[in-house]
Image 1 (cartoon, rainbow, N blue to C red):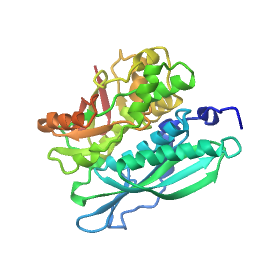
Image 2: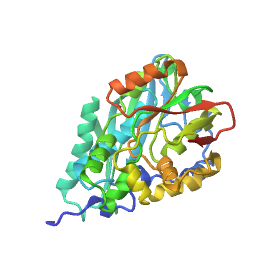
Image 3: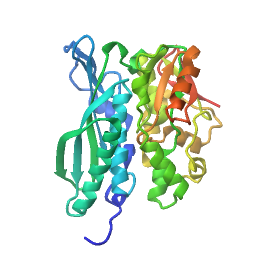
Image 4: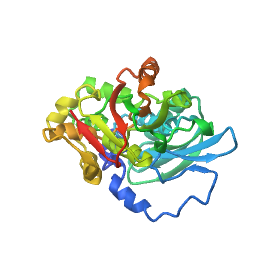
Amino acid sequence: MTDPIRLTSLAHGGGCGCKLAPGVLKDILSGMPATAIFPQLMVGTETSDDAAVWRLNDSQALVATTDFFMPVVDDPFEFGRIAATNALSDVYAMGATPIFALAIVGMPVDKLAPATIRAILEGGASVCAAAGVPVAGGHSIDSVEPIYGLVALGLVHPDKLLKNAAARAGDVLILTKGLGVGILSAAFKQEKLDAEGYAALIASTTQLNVVGAELAGMAGVSALTDVTGFGLLGHALEMCRGAGLAAELDAHAPVLLPGVEALAREGVRTGASGRNWVSYGDDVRLPGDLPDWRRDILCDPQTSGGLLIAVAPEVAEAVLDLVRARGFDRAVVVGRLKAGSPQVTVVG
């Protein structure tokens, strides 16, 4: 096997853009058995939270999640880093600290050299090492498309757990990372992405959301989620549905990653952004003059995206100071929560 194969050419999608559309997922899960009969299950599927949570005792709850997808870049080591960072994010998004991970590996072994597959696993293991957790095992299969991710387990104090349903009317919403990962990844596949855009893509998707564990128990922080495959609008709407609230988002408030606006104006987008809009657009109110490219950014799937934090207004600056001190220099207030039926109104 002497000719290098672009990893992205082996996959029909990439990153969190591979996720099932929110409407499709809702239909699939609608017939699942109720979980209320398990009193120790603190979080299941009911509120679209980022992970399941099981109370172990009065001071510990186990957070469990799994996340995997197809390549968003061609470099195998970077693909592994991105996938692992994304998987661990769901633990941090519950306010928890990861304790160990298991690898999920599906590879077309007739197309990829063992060294390439090894590099993917090494990339994931390097991120887990940076997070202070081992990859303690896993499972591998021969598959048509390359797939990699993690089962991630973590611990949190039951009283410090951050979940969607705990958001409060009056909270402001802080987003910790810039938007546009899906657009940058689409441009990469179309060979339209310059060096600055590629560097921004890698830097954003491999930045661990470790600050989520610090937010647990912090006065005034009520809810937390990470913005991934459903885009900012979709994950804000999940928070609204979990808490029974409405949200108002400023279309121009989120910081955009370098090059994203220009690419969006050119019509570069992922198929997932359109599927996202079809799935939840009925519960979103847009200004009449909002251009389609701006809507695409708000629906853009964010592989290993930022945290969306619901926080009391009086401590918003303190939370921003903490988040920025941890390296999230694009963190900004993007909206607020209010009483009302679960929907998102976009202003600006």
